[in-house]
Image (cartoon, rainbow, N blue to C red; front, side, top):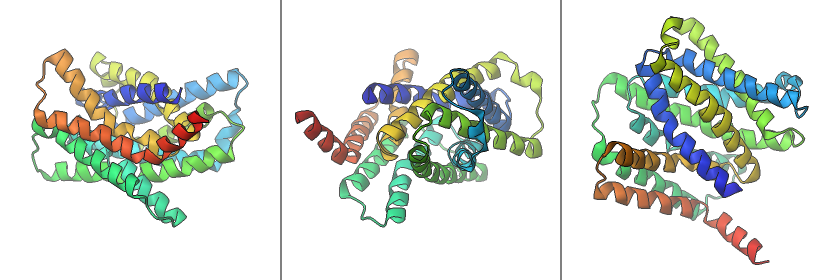
Length: 300
């Protein structure tokens, strides 16, 4: 079940960078479209859970939901959506791949434990693999806005790592609550914060939002990217650890490369193949300790 949900999450998240880029290129305001995405997805999910009597709207009164939403949704996607005005979706994916390493470093700092050699080696291998994977097809114009976009995505990953580690504690604190309800509540808060930011920084033209080029990526991101993908992500954190679900960031560029080759006939270079192999090795190394434990459990 964990493996199947992980693979599905990787497939969904592997296409969200491009969906965000398509919406922004169609003229959708970054903060507004991100806010609508998460507020709609969170509202639908939480209402569904309340209707099934598996959650209560009183969950929104807990400060933990606000803090989680500020980290996992607002901080991450405010920076990412803004940055993709100036970056390609591939560059954004590469920079986002730094999150697992940041999570490891943050966990080590908070717990004052020594960082295992396998974890740090796996994260570094995964990051190198991402660069190798996309290097042949990336051309970069080193403008000021491009540099600011790169910095914004990296800042977003700091929010991501803090939100991921904190959400683990939230799940443990709210063990009687469904992870789906917890995820929905934090998305509502994150989406609301994004809309507040949009109110003070953007001029929104609703006619643009309802054009096919803007509305279809938005619907895709609401239904699959947020309602499905982020719910699985939250569930995996509860079932495993904060690092393992975040390794989807190493898989997403590989998925994008394969889709491009199959559907659009884009060539795959030897360097890209080497990058893909490096990514898989990195994921195995990161989770080497967990894999050993699960093998022992299976033998028993």
